[in-house]
Structures are given as structure tokens and as C-alpha cells.
Length: 189
Image (cartoon, rainbow, N blue to C red; front, side):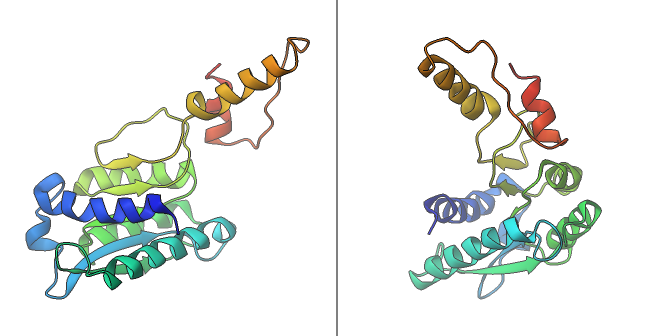
């Protein structure tokens, strides 16, 4: 199981309880536990990538609960399916924060899904853990960006490959889809 998700779930709840976001001690704790949102596509084109992330969060919460929970409370995952629809991501995020009153949300895979929920998390002072690499052109106190940016991942890789080729190659091409991350990567050289 991913140590990253274990660590994030274990740290996110006490951080939220301590007042890092809204009044979690009053709004987000039930008598039996703490609700955490899981915002990953389980249907649609992104389900192939995001279903495994949902599974990791569920495995992590099961393991944490089996060892006594966090601060004596069980972690209660609330899973929603934004169905690979970018507008639906924002709607589901708002539901998790306002209706379900989750303490924290783990979710999104694509940059466009993250960008669609960003205004919701900022307006509601919610907390999102974003688990994959991103383009690095955004910062928010409401999002923990846990993945590498191009300057941490792609640029060192290209530099290494070009140096290993003995300097005989003067150009290197990164191919990708016409998408936020790929467009931003081109501009980070």
C-alpha cells in the first residue's frame, strides 16, 4: 500500500482538527469518526486511472481504522463519482464539503479536474490532497500538491539522457497530448 496515502490520511485529519481549515472539531467529526472525501472518477474515460486511487484511499483508511483510527476516531470515507466530467468534479466537491461535511478530500487526477474544484475548495476553505504530478503553475493554501512538477521530474530526466548520449544530440522531444500539463511542460525549458 502507498506510504504516501497512509501518511496523508494520518496527517490530514489532525491538521484539519487543529484548525488548518474550517472548524473541523465541530463540523467534521461524528460520534463514531471523521469523514474524508474521495473524489475520483469511477466511470467515464478517467476511471481506468482513478479507480486505483480510490482503492488506495480505501485501503489506507481500512489500515488506519484497524490500528485504532486517528486520535481515537475511525476514518469514514465518503466516495463520490464525478464520472470524468470536469464540471461535475466541482459539484461533487461542493457536496462533499457542504452536505457531507468531510474534513479533507483526496481526489482529482487531471489538471483540468483540479482547476475546476480549486474555486470550491478556496470558497469553502476546504482541503484537497492532489495525488499526481502537476504543471507547477498554481499554488493554493487549500491544496496539497503531492506530485512532482516538470522541473523536478522531466527536466532532470532530459538532461540526464542528453548527457548519457555523449552530447551528440542537440534536440530532445517530449511528446504528449494537447493538454494543460503538456502545454506547461513545453514552456518550462
